Length: 141
Image (cartoon, rainbow, N blue to C red; front, side):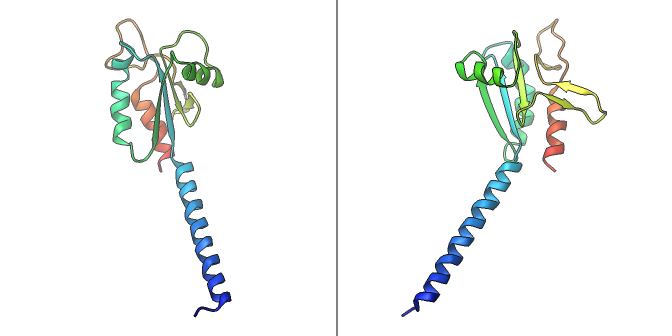
């Protein structure tokens, strides 16, 4: 029969190990970048976002992607929380921010249509899926 002191020590050791595992899991999750795509759920926005979604899908195990329909109460609330106003078709947040620095020091604002394939004629985007990928690359090291 086990001595009560040995049983208690085993129980405490098991509890400590479980706590350490949970701590490591939360640290791993905290380091995982979160990309939020807040956008209209109809064309031409959806076709403009296709290249971005393809790049994000390639990194799906290393980051969390959340999509929010801009025209829902949740979308409106999230835009308000990050200070985006006016009629914008797309907002991409990385770790809660849409304004970031490029490697060359210039600013990039992940608001409105992206540049590149799928973007409607006459709408010049100021950011691209490559910008999002470059920002994420620094966070995924």
